Structures are given as structure tokens and as C-alpha cells.
Image 1 (cartoon, helix red, strand yellow):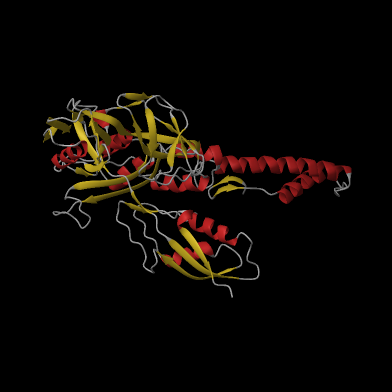
Image 2 (cartoon, rainbow, N blue to C red):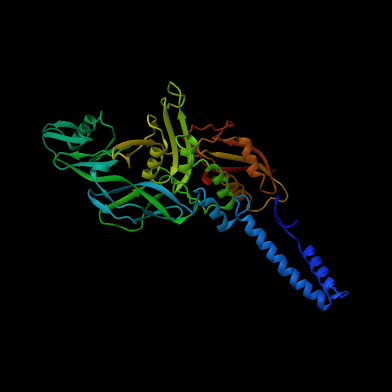
Length: 459
């Protein structure tokens, strides 16, 4: 049987089609010449090839209905039936600190450049360099005189009372000492007191103090999509100057982007996301977070015990660690997919308003902490070692990616290096040792090309 059968689609092949046409012609016209070089033979060949192409098309249409055999747009359509959409190419993302004069406004689309690679990043929101959001503040004295010098941080006032004998540096040091209990770090330099914090300081000062510079966090995305690498401290060049914008820097590495999702990756994610219609489960939360735009990795953990677990998660709490994506979108998914009475763990705090009651709720989650180990590879060159062998080995190691919480096992790196011809790997050390790296659930290992060195032991 051919065509649609109880066993599926059965394709008829070209030789079988040709034989069937020959049989039909002989039955209709009698003993005719069906050799390939004859007129009948040529007609049979033309007709058989056309029929074979139609049968192949029919099989392709049949296979396009199933995720394991569909490809391209057909696979997109099949996956869409379960709410899974192919991830487009994603840009590298980073939250950079923008420094400038107070009340400077930066409209969305301001550009900064990676000083090493020249990659350009654009801000995604319009934001002001304002005291309420500042995580950095540089203070200078307006006057040097006897009196109270007050700095208010998050609503709490800290005061140093100067005498007429105090110098500028003594007053700055006195203000710094008064801020000992404040949630800020302090550095006194010549003529300036610099304060930094991990959260908005909502800073204000008395009239005899001037705020010379503020720094606020602003999200940026690379103009070019794909897996661009942005190391900490590399986003430093301002491409679109604005009056009052003085400098920019990224204290943390960028969240690396990705190329457009391949068919194989889409199939795998569809399998992982088939529980997307479930509720109040880790699988449902994980599946929905993976579907969120610009989210590149997810690790969701729970503590349903009666005591705080070994990683510090309180009982009856969800701990979601999410790389990439918009804070509000992530928080909304966590809020919608988590049962009442379950708490959230994390340093990222987002207020979500219930669509049903209109009440506001705090949702917490974490961003991953990155581990960028130093890797040293000792090797011996064989006769077919390529001239660019070191670079090929470096690329092979960098191509090994890890998910959040995945451990680095040294022997598995040999597999990566063995893809390069002409090399015999003698040994691999990680951070000058031989121990594997066992990350916590909120940690992600990255192999950075600049952290890989090679030792050639060839005699």
C-alpha cells in the first residue's frame, strides 16, 4: 500500500512509478518499445519524474504536520499550536551605570561603544540622571565654614557639624564618618566624597554641599544581534553625546545574546515547554519564563520543606534565577504561575499589580552571578597541527556553554579540544588547580576567550 496507510505515509519511489507506467502502456498499446532511448521510454521517464516529485511533495506536506519532521516555517506553525514561538536572534544586554550632572535626561536610543570591540549599544528607556535613582554620587563642598553638613540617604539624615577650624578635607572626612551607618560605600579623595550603593539612594544634601555627579543604572542592548561578548568595564565610550552626560561604564558583564533559534533548538524547547498549560508547578514557571522575550536561561528552585535549605532559601519559597528579559515581564509570569502563600526569593524586586483585584504585590527573583574561570591548556603539537591551532582550541572551548547551575567537569573539556586536529592535550587546569567547579543554583559558568591560555610542550 502507498499513500496514507495505517502505518503512516508510504512513498512510492521513482523505479516503482516507472514500472507502473510501463505496465499501463503495455496493457493499452501492446508490445511496445519502452527502452530509455525510445520515444515511449523518454515519455515514461518524463512522466515518472514528475509523478515522483509530486509524491515527494505529498510526503513533505505530511511530515510538515509533526514537530520531529517539520522544518523551517512549517515547524514554526506546528510549535505555535502549543504556544511555542521560535526565538529570534537576540542582542547582548547589559545594565550600565550612566554618570552625569544631576537632572540630565537621556532619551531612549542613546549609544555607547565597547572600547575593545567597537560594538555599539543603545539605551532602551528614557531616563533621568536623578537623585532618587542614583547608585553613585560625588559630593563636593559649596562652602567651607562652621555649621551642619547633612546628607540624607533613603529618608535618613546624617549630619557632621563643622567648626571654623575644620578644613575642606576634614569636613569631607567628617561627613563620611557620619555616614557609617548608611547603606552606602564611601571614598574620600581630594576635594570630593564619593558614595556608591546597590540600590537607589534617594540622596539629598544640605545647601552647603553640592552634588557634582550622579550615576544611575540604565539598560542597554546591542544594535547587532547575536552572541556578542561584553566584559565588565568595557562599555565606556559615549557615541551620542548629550550635555550633562559625562561617562558610562558597566560594572557587570553583559548578558550574551544569541543567534536565531535553529530547528533543533526549537524542537528541544518545545518538548521542554509542553507543560506550559500547567499551573503552580516549577515546570510551568520554567516553561513560561523560557517563552519570555529576550530571556536566555532559567533556573527555578523551590523549598517546600519546613526549614531554610542549604542555599539559604526560606521554606515555602520559590527561587527563580533568570538571565535576560524584562523585569516586569518576568515578575508578571512568576506572579501568575505561583500559588497563593508561596514566597519569592531574590534581590530583584518588582511591583506587580493584580489584574483581578488591582492590589500591588512585590515579586522577587535573581539574576545569575557569573563565574569566569582561568583555564590553562598544556599540549603537544603533532605533525598535522594547524598554524592557527591555538585559536581553534580557544574557539572550541568558548563554544562550550553552560546553563545556570551546571557544573564544569574538567575531563569534559577534553572533548571540546579533541575537535581540533593535530593536537595532543597533556593537561587542563582551572584557576591553577584540578578541581571541578560546582556552582550554586544562581551561578553560571562562562568560558571567556581572554581567560584561556596555552602552554606548548612540544619538544
